[in-house]
Image (spheres, rainbow, N blue to C red):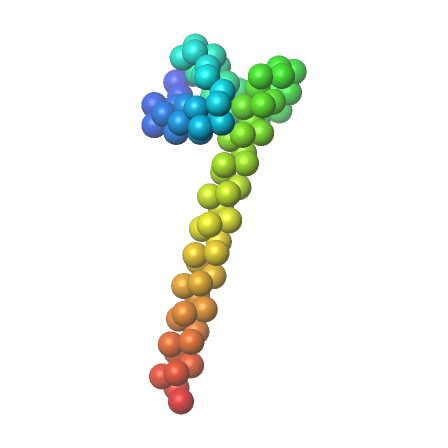
Length: 85
């Protein structure tokens, strides 16, 4: 089995713990391996739960980053507009 980054495992463990899903280290590594290297794998019910929780958390983070970026761009546009007046 290929190596999975330890920081990724820690983040996933924290996300799953917050969602009240406790996995052993062996299962956590297996789920992370499937997530990183076998993204089309859908035959395991536990993996499907894992993927749903991790994907939901990632999409929430992307939404926050998108809103922050839009706010920064709008602020820059307002500042440039006021300097040109």
